[in-house]
Length: 101
Image (cartoon, rainbow, N blue to C red; front, side, top):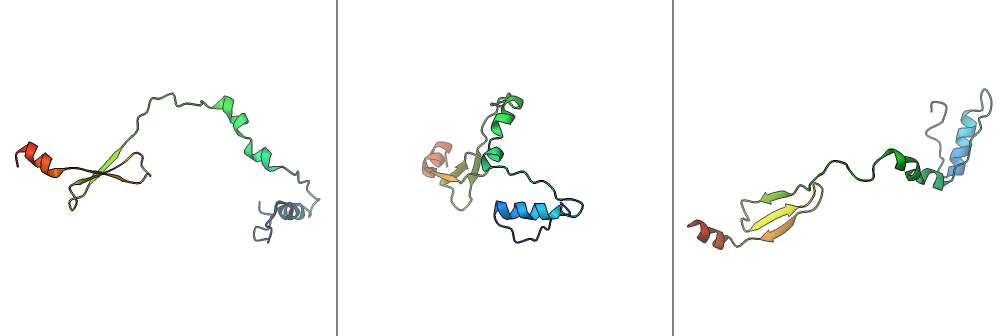
């Protein structure tokens, strides 16, 4: 990777092929094999026998709950760690009545 000019103005695969061929021209020209996009995207057939399709350990979903002091009537929750919060309206006067307040 040291011989390749990384700041070259190559934007297309054919331009990068020219850059790689020029990088190995000092001792002797290097052979650059053309690969199609399908060769790079079809790696699932290669990995399928090596990995399991399902996780062998039973897992469960984690839910995150959030209650704000300013808005006690809303219970915010999300199903996964990066998901957005969904709100549930709680009738706090019924909760207070059940608790005896």
